[in-house]
Length: 363
Ligand code: DAH
Image (tube, rainbow, N blue to C red; front, side, top):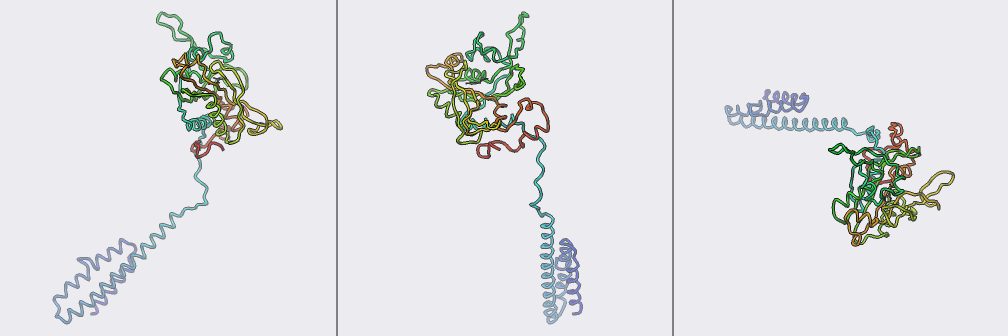
């Protein structure tokens, strides 16, 4: 029986020495597998006489069990050690700073346009667009600004030569649109009422003043339906101003004004203070103009083939740069277009910080 004890010691030593799971499995195959040493010993039992066979068989079974148990024990120890090592290697240090933000910033003009679209989009307006290079009719005439109308002078228009006709005659001159209002006309011409659109876009005026830029941005709004009245316009713009500036009780007032394309027309002011030369939006008895608006002039509806007997609507327009300056405290209009990286880093917005009604519009 010396050989069975020896076998046992050898096999248990091999289990102990196995360096990893693969080596351990090799030991298992060599000991307990079909061609393993214990199996071979078992096969030899047949040649023994019955008494010896029984004793040797029992002894071999004990060795087999002991080796199997040792392998199991070693295996779970190795697996536990492996898991510990993995957990230690994958430790997450929650005190580390977050990964660095991407370098690019969203320009405040883009951000403010997105904010405006989120608010008005939620009210059911959809975005409409039109060309920057317009014809005189869409930019002026259809909007009830006839050729000799004084409003034309106020627009400081950039004119472009029209394409020459086949016979070489000069074509009708074109204009860089002076406002986004011509998209009202294009929208109404393209389909039937009701209409409910907002129009963000670039606009152009040749104003030499330092507080103006030859290119700037506006958002226009147009709503036409059968029952639309001034109360709808008021509610819409009050809600808009309060959402945009993030103040539920922001004072908003409508002051009578004049635009050729609306009748009656109003300018919309929000409350502010100017104490100590510092402008602050909110309560305070002072007023600041932010929007032009009014009920669409019946002549404009007629020019677009909409029957003013059955339909009426409201329209409004605002300057995006002005809204951005007021909301984010940008002191100088010209800096919007200087592409100064230091300015962009300061006034720009993180690319993943997209405005939403639930996620926030006001930072
Ligand atoms: N188009 C005007 C401008 O550029 C802004 C404006 C005022 C648009 C009143 C409108 C409106 O639709 O109703 O100054």
